[in-house]
Length: 491
Image 1 (tube, rainbow, N blue to C red):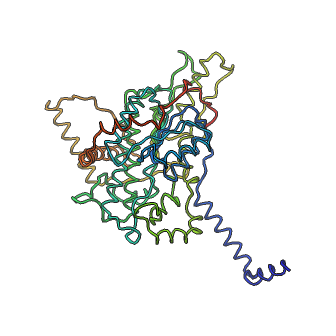
Image 2: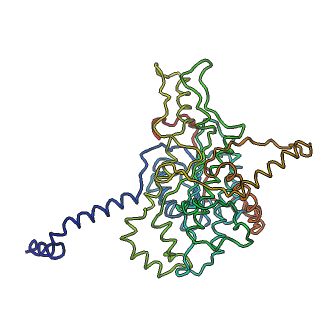
Image 3: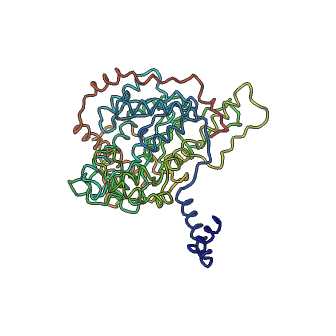
């Protein structure tokens, strides 16, 4: 009886003459879903005794990332704008510790919209006994900003201020913590990962402008579309990250892999063309996620004071399509894990050098060949692969920079200018707009940071006292395991 009913339904709603069409449709949908979900990283790495600082840790992507890193034994410090003794933070931290069997998960209060709060946190971190950092992951910039007027009453000016604040928070934390990274042992593998939104391609084909303001205008850039504004923010972060790598490579303290005994050629020093510094700055784009991108675009979060019922309705109705063409947080974080797990030439050769000099070194030649894929310093990664972008710097900016350099040379030649500071010789590799685009972005960040701090003065000393009185976070505990002790065969 039941089989007869099913047979009748099949022949009624799925006529046999359309079997091929139905099969092709199902296969096409499955292929589209596989393509939209992107690649999964094939790398792995043991993160025990590795300290990772994470911003945006209590977003959907951040929580998924914390869980994944904690399962691999990482010591995690997640920043939150909420007090660390608040109920929502303590519950999440305790839950993560229980589910991952990792007690080395901590939360620390730091409001990324307040420069005073950022300075207070960085000062507190730098004055602690344990200052070890193996990675900084800026995941707060991935969250989509900007909602169509039909879903929210927020103004474009407020959205632009939020975008600028996120970018300046990344810049400020990087510059404040960089001294601690530079004095780390040269064999330590340190990574700065800037997680950007996936709309960088929307701005890559346009003339590049590093400014927080439209060139020739005195008003904030609010006349563009939401996706274009998000793309400009993302592209600017990518250019900044690439220029940060140029600066790290140009520093005289750029670390080199320890050589073996004099005269030994078993472990060569890595070529400067591959990697110059043990600190690697990388951009990673997780792609379009259902929660961090689409949900925020539709303003579907009713926990937010401005949440939209209509946006939530659309978000639920579109779930069948979103499940096919957008990523879950688990799949979105794959590119972040990929750039964190990929080996670097320094790490491989450093382990080989320590093995060669150890008493338990095996006889025979050491394998110092690089694996098929190594991390490219300063690159942008999306879908677990490096992405090349053609960033076009307007000719007027190029000409203006050329005239400025010519004027400096004339002044130097006449003896009117004396060099009071050592000038870094930063190579122009031409990537992502070259040295000019990176320098312009860096200078814009410096200028905008001064304005941001003047508009949000805050009380750094008050923030320090508030952090000092907090007892929810224990001091970081890192075992004395050496950097070279990490398994070189696991990435």
